[in-house]
Image (cartoon, rainbow, N blue to C red):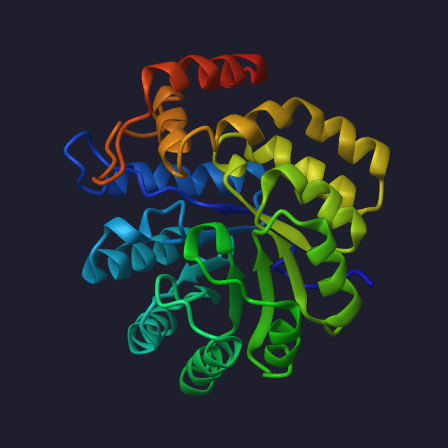
Length: 296
């Protein structure tokens, strides 16, 4: 069953634009928010993986979230990335997101610690009980070294303000399990651009996308077709984006997408160590995909 919920469809895992010296470029951030509002993006995720949350300190992290909420000005929902590998830190960031008026929070699994499934359950349960704001689980085992299993997600779905999950496994069998076992009102998002359209056609509620930074209008249209169960049209609209879905991960995200946005004139070239500017060899491949799409 499809949901009549504002947080469905194409949502962007927004980059954090930086000047060449690595400082946050808030003028470019304003332009990006306007770009997504005009392009039909259904929601902005501020300070997720693509937003370089791992390279900003906590004060910067909160300030980027605050500015994004202010710039959006209720024109588009803002979901704040507030996950951390420390439960207490995740609670602090989630409290801050509530205070600045974020519409919901996205909480990545606690990376590096490799907690048990019970540890994951208790982590998310405590955050949800402590901060009264809608919360979305985020499972990306390829980056965190911990996998939030479907049975744990189902347990967590019983907590009233845990409203959904971003599944970035890229495994459609996992997606099918979530569709089959989670409550009908629990939001299921793809976090894998290459399989997102199929995920939505199967019954998912949208995608949280890296590609949406570069081609928000095109991706929004593809997702909407999938959401409308128009398989032929969804696949037709997604076809020109498939090269981009791959090349934006030719090196670790967000290295390629930040270079792409710079080439499109949307921001400076800044990126923070230990991340580095996209290699020359990879630039040739990504530039071809951008050219094919007509965005540069």
